[in-house]
Image (cartoon, rainbow, N blue to C red; front, side, top):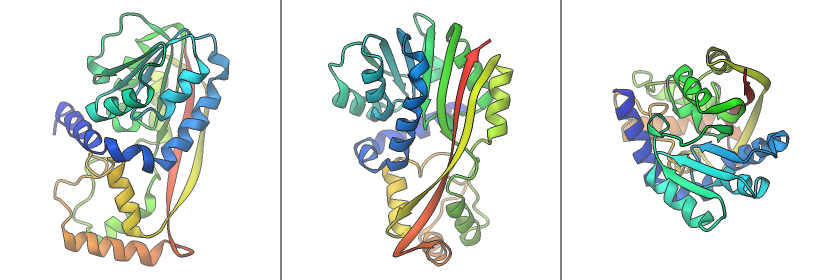
Length: 264
């Protein structure tokens, strides 16, 4: 599958999940809150570009933090853009765009570019960072959070045991991959950290349902060249339930990386 086709698939999956994403995106909401706390030093930014705005989890915080700034919120999933406009429509200075990052043509450069829980869907990472660096002003900053290798490790292990012949097409990036991409793009890393989070779910079935409602089950990070059938899924759920119990339910782990970089 080409990168263009991959982007279309991801966009279609997130569009289909747009109406359910906001309510079920617990981890993403928490990440957006943590990321917004990293933006205090950028309070003077008058133009902001947000990559992968989704339903507006970070966008709403940006509007409050930067009430006088122009904010261009970008997403390649039409359903997500519609949800963001519905929730935040009429907010002064906010402009929502339906566009792929690689096709978006900014009229001006930005002193601040932000992204929360989105850049891990984009590949190759080095190309993404070079594109973003090219959209920054001379001393502009890139502040973002993304999921890295180790996220949903339990689900990955259960899937490997249940359907070893059907691995996902691609894996999440590592901290090393992201760091190297930033340096290659000419960006100086000012801050970076990685945190582990554990989320409880009522059952393995509930975990899969919530991932589906977030649009996470249709992209290359989840999809295999061969589809998981009902038997595979039944084995997967049974395996997950037996290995990853937490009280009356199950748990899932998330590895979140936060970066703050400046154009050198």
